[in-house]
Length: 108
Image (tube, rainbow, N blue to C red):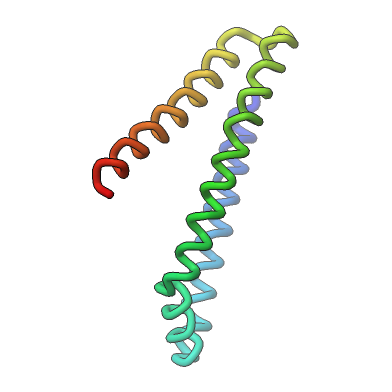
């Protein structure tokens, strides 16, 4: 069963993120100039726009790649439950994107 290994991997990832955040906060606490620069960078409209465009490009490439992966799973004869779970995740992402497309279309 792979579940324990997945849980160990997730736990290590969460632990690493937490330790990294704590170390960052301690380093930043001693350097207010760096803290101010980080805050400016996070609120900068240009950086926000770049991050959003990068996410959009990643979503644009994810849809056909995920579709090809699903087709590959189906042709390889992978267990039906795995294919159905993957299809449901794929459709959730697609419908989520459609929902927000319509929502933002009405707002703007």
